[in-house]
Length: 377
Image (cartoon, rainbow, N blue to C red; front, side, top):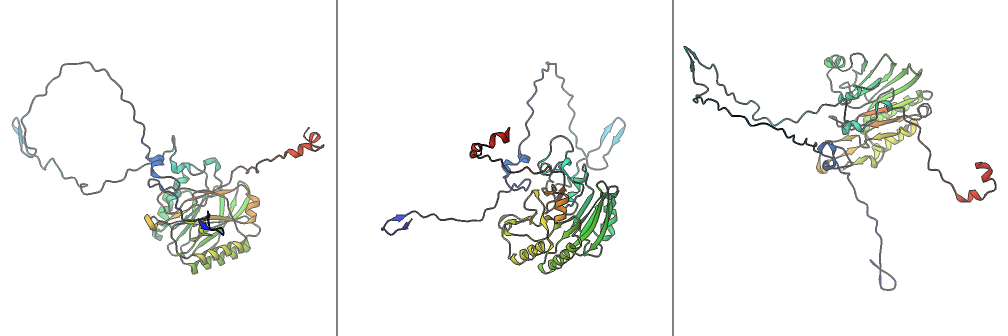
């Protein structure tokens, strides 16, 4: 209440804005619901007991044997047996903490809540750009992806060939050994597409992809932005140079840009990132890139902390140029729920149905026109 001119008081409306953090499930680390509502915590229905008729029979008592020490020798006729070592051995795992149960992915039957968040096999497109180490390779079990990008592999050079042969032995691989820690890997199925690596940098790999099925050539740039703002400025300059080379070809840019576009893409306490956002938005404007429609997880990165240090950001995204928009108007990408990684895998999809138009509106005054009835008849 505030005093008014008449000496009384009048009600006053005050708008209050405060930070709101969405609830997070502690079981599956998904935003939007608590652990009580998670399907992983729902108890399985117990099978009712089955009544079985067992007729009474006479019971036989086992003959009682005199107790004997386990380590004491015993005699069977003329032979004496002496145990070579104690029968009771100490438990080696006595002081170890109990291990967590291992849950395997079910290929048939009920789908897990993590698998339900991703697109179906029919909705996925022919190209795939995916994030972070080998956490996302489970998507290749029963799908038709033909292009793969891996970031932050942290694999030693002498182990690269062994890991590639174990993961996807029939695919072709390209690793930028010049960058520190060979941070970016790409792989493709040469039975369906041809890949020509055009340019490599410490924060990106740019390549041309020829899709044989549709006789189409596209450009794909896999991004892994540096942590420091000054180092990312070199990436923005490289993207502007590549944009001038992709004016006549569909171009997709995807990966971890290590920065956000606005404050709505952050949940938690973060430092001053205004200059980083300005540099990123300026690069997008200069390159003429557009955000590709997305679905799934809004925040794609988590710092794996709890309490006041809990932080979520949308660091991973896909951008396209106008040529891509004209050629693949229904394409979109899905951000899936991460499993062991701190980033969300991204899957490019291209078979979504055309979006329907807005709601149909009919004004009654149109029926008063003399031309209305002849038109609808």
